[in-house]
Length: 207
Image 1 (cartoon, one colour):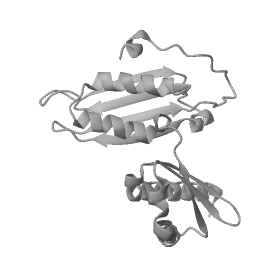
Image 2 (cartoon, rainbow, N blue to C red; image 1 turned 90 degrees about the horizontal axis):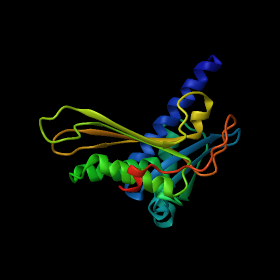
Image 3 (tube, helix red, strand yellow; image 1 turned 180 degrees about the vertical axis):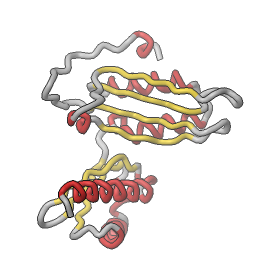
């Protein structure tokens, strides 16, 4: 197998493992997963709001997850480490789910996005972007997109790997809405620039 094919295969396996864990651990407040393969084992670090739900009584749940990943995804010697989320406002998937839930409750989309951006930045992020696409108005209205960003969010090159990125879908009565959240966490160092203090726009401060 060519080296390029191996890289593609590894990326697909990581994506499928991430989707599986997200589905199985949604009640534990799943946020993200990091997968690192070594010659000895595959280290899978799961970030959740409630680690106890992942571990389970006497470790039963985590043992079951480990065995499933080993069999279903052909991962040799997987080791799952569970980490508690320190700040949910710096976790894109948790923020996206929160926004999606508020959309389903019929709250004003633009105001929700502005409030979420303010909260993300007040918790130390160096940059944040929220994109909502779909039926953002009442029944019969056309689909549209709202895109709001603050700070530095790289869009191209290897530095994009430093940006946390997640997507959730909201299902209000009048149609689906996709929510994408991108966050540059505190302390991120970019090789090509220095991030200075970020002043929030007045529209965000008033949200």
